[in-house]
Image 1 (spheres, rainbow, N blue to C red):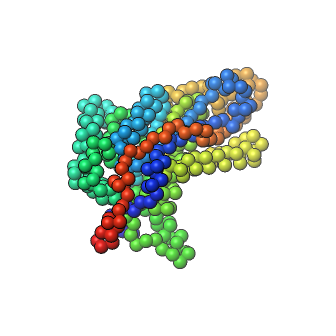
Image 2: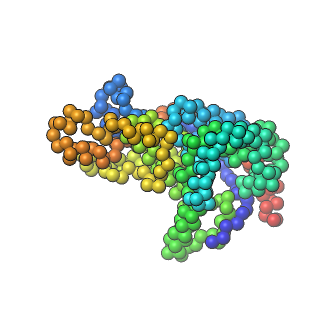
Image 3: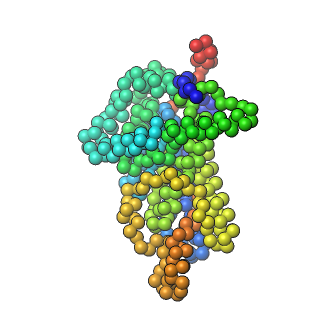
Length: 364
């Protein structure tokens, strides 16, 4: 299959300009909370959270600064904060190289300051590279340049600032890489052939992430990775936070998949009469420990361990083994209120195609 670059057609921008970025918080709650007792008794339990922040590839500096402010405060408030980045890397090796670059930036203050300055000055990339990015995203480069004091590309402002401010808390393993994309497209091609259908002969590079089968796997994977981190934190009695600053048109599905993982937990509780099956909707490919994982794992009072009194009551080895290997009974619930509602602060004409643009594209 060939991949060619072409214009990325958008829709529903009236909606996103009006609605803005609605920041949603998902809480990880123990199924046994009611059995544990009143709130003051439950205070020792960990309460991991997931924060989903819809973003755009181009937006106002004011919007990006609000995102940066929240993430910066979250990291300073809690070192067990992870930011799951959106972006399809070329390979696993490229993922690791990118993570190494984040670490190098955080260890070199001069490099950090340079990154911040280039993001502020909009000089991280050459005009040629920026023009190519704009072409892939169907953004008018000249118009964007005329607005650079208030509007920026995410690649040129938000991401470099994130790398310079909290690079050690960034993770890029929650998205697919190109080898996975190619495999999924091949599997989809085989499936369609059995139905007498076929994939398009070419798919634009900029459209890969939103191609239905790819999009579904990306959204499901990041949801599973977020759940996995929360489950591990709960086991370690750690109040961690996963932040997901992903594209506006992905976030609703991501939240759906986070909550959908509750089905396996509730089914296991019903089937086992209070026990929990090993399936918790997590992803085995979601490694990447948080900054304080090593210290956290030394705790000997986690929820998966027996107290001395309970162990002495009988069946020490068997009971300990049963509890030790039983995953935590967590359910994920959406908070009653939005964490925030922030306008994207991007002019509609910058991201919406005009009739003239549509006519010119037909002629080209």
